[in-house]
Image 1: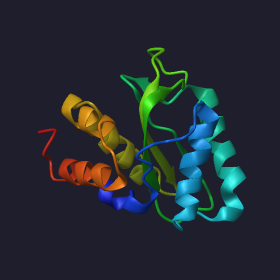
Image 2: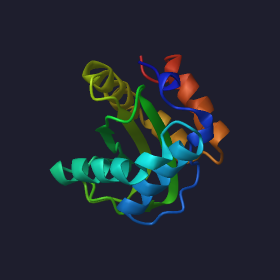
Image 3: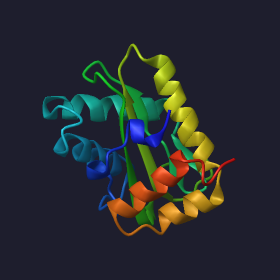
Image 4: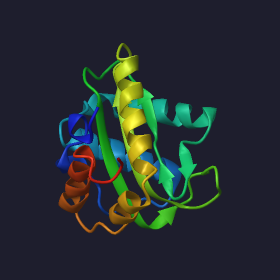
Length: 158
């Protein structure tokens, strides 16, 4: 599964305003709603589902990266977005460091395999230091989208 299968340029947040974990989650969910990828009626339910997932263990995986995700009955297709925080956000990351890169993923309840494939792709790409460095230096949603397209075309990880 490629980034282009679930991330739309319009929902990418190249400079997050939030300065805490819940704020980042709310900002990213809002971007998905504002761009028609999620129903506004489900805003609070989706935010709470992601926060509940975070209670199981932080999705802040280290090296300045977090992958907040959930499965939710209101979505028909996998949707996702990317957020970048130049200053970093305390996200209870496994290494205790602030997070600068956020990959949010929300999947239908009945698409477990697709959810796992999307998470696998994200994880694979995030292992590449060049990919992460370029994303952290992005100044616009278009910059982020271009880097995701390059990753989809295997320009980072062999």
